[in-house]
Amino acid sequence: MKNEDKDLTRRKTIGWILRAGIGAVIAAIVVKTSRRSSGGRLVWQIDPRKCIQCGKCETACVLQQSAVKCVHGIQMCGYCKLCFGYFKPDAPRLDEAAENQICPTGALIRKFIEPPYFEYTVDEDLCTGCGLCVKGCTNFGNGSLYLQVRHDICVNCNACRIAEVCPSDAFVQVPENDPYLLKELLPRET
Image 1 (tube, rainbow, N blue to C red):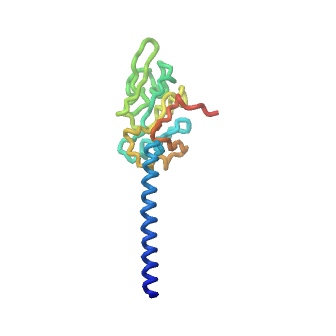
Image 2 (tube, rainbow, N blue to C red):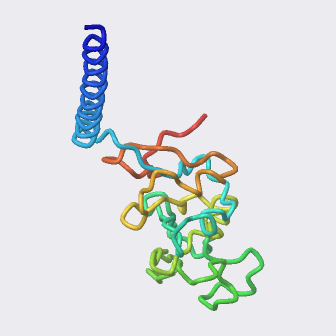
Image 3 (cartoon, one colour):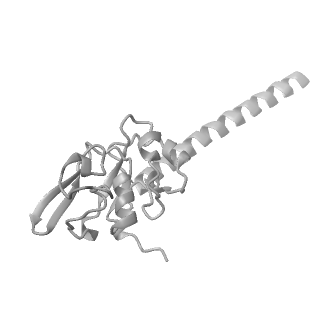
């Protein structure tokens, strides 16, 4: 009789553990599904107010060409003849010659509008996320150039290597349904 009680107790214990495990799996699936439907998943993004343009976005990304790209806040831009994100500080001339440009890949494109106005756009296919143009624009211009993680390129592993090495903690997690921190729309820090 005592052996039957032990077997019955073992069976009850194993059954309880299995039911608890199955319940936990079901609960995890329900939570994951509800987060997905409500946009509760988080993705990495650069807070342009914290970014110091250190250049690590270009080299630390797990992708061969970084998912970080320069963004141009056109609403903030003044359509200047002299763009500090386009020209090197010691540029001998203000023309499109490569030796005068700060971008090593020519990703920042200058288009003549009318004297003395030029429009600047970013060719994302050429942009490596080095941040040189952003540094020039931030230090000497109006800050209309800044870096953002492009989520159509990013593998969204949620273990971002760039976030691990970012010296200014500019990488933050934001809701997947609103993944971009556009500088021109962010409240100013005081």
